[in-house]
View: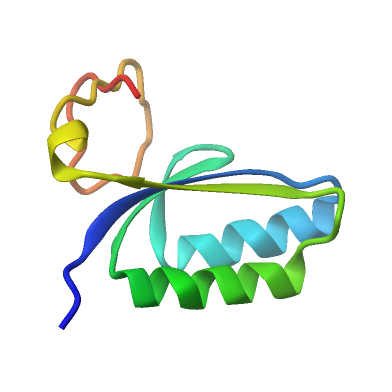
Length: 96
C-alpha cells in the first residue's frame, strides 16, 4: 500500500470555462490555498489519476505545476494572511 504524501498544485489556465473545470477537478482531491494553488495529501497513484483527469481538460496554452512536498519541508512552511482557507491543517502563518 502506498503512503500518502503532500503535493502542491498550481495552474495557469487561459480559458475561463476550462479554468472552472480544472479548479473543480482539483478541488475533489485537494484544498485551496490561493485562487490557483492547492495542496493535496494523496498517494502517487491517486495523483496519477488526477493528472489523467486534468490532461483531458487542459490545452497546449495551459500550464499545471505539480510538486511533491516531503514531510520535512512541509513542516517548515509558513502561511501569512491566509483568510478563508479550507486547509484542515492551517497554521496561522505559512510560507512556501
